[in-house]
Amino acid sequence: MIVALLNQQGGVGKTTLALHLAGVWACQGHRITVVDADPDACAVEWSELRAQETLPSRFTVIAIARDTLHRELPPITRDVDRAIIDGPSHIEPITRSALMAADFVLVPVQPPPFQGLAFVETLRLANGIMTVRPQLRIRLVLNRCNARAGVTQNLTQALADYDPPALTSSITERAVFAEVMQSGRLAFELPHSSAAIQEITALAAEVERIVP
Ligand SMILES: Nc1ncnc2c1ncn2[C@@H]1O[C@H](COP(=O)(O)OP(=O)(O)OP(=O)(O)O)[C@@H](O)[C@H]1O
Ligand SMILES: [Mg+2]
Image (tube, rainbow, N blue to C red; front, side, top):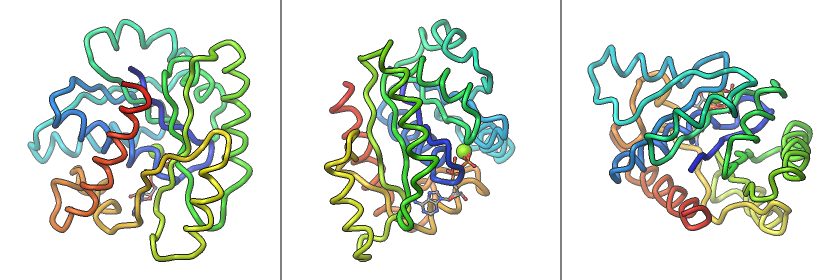
């Protein structure tokens, strides 16, 4: 299975969620490769930092930030259970290629304000690809939400009826997630992460229910 984290908007949590889905599934015994499709190479840098700190790799991270991703992936994914594409922002040809490669697309969105343009643009690209790949599944996922904020609740309700809908699982704004990129660690390798672990595990389980 190939899962892609895509949103043409930057900073919405594509890399953070890609690494954590990979971490959860790797800990469950699946063979995982994260494909860094972003020329900024944040996932690759994270894995290099990890290697410098002699932390266990848990999963492979490779860089394919090219619009030929969909043609390059099949031989790479043959030997893994799941590949997770960490998409770029504002690079339409690579996002299109990821949409051609993926079985399941997660679009992280953040409240507030609801970032309409790039998000809708990503869905427009996805709808175009679905005319030739109707089997492609897409879901939104709320990231960096504050469960107590009324605006988040309103957005959650609005997105539940959206097409494509949002997942029931969402990810809260947490300091432990913000430490991930600088530390080369996953949230569950850092202190005070039990709530973060629960959220990420629930997200991974919900994705698996949609694309087993
Ligand atoms: N749930 C969260 N709680 C706190 N911080 C978060 C959360 N999700 C992401 N962040 C932080 O927000 C920033 C952007 O996240 P991330 O790099 O994952 O986004 P991105 O969509 O991959 O961005 P880009 O398009 O630039 O690659 C990072 O500093 C990350 O640590
Ligand atoms: Mg990123």
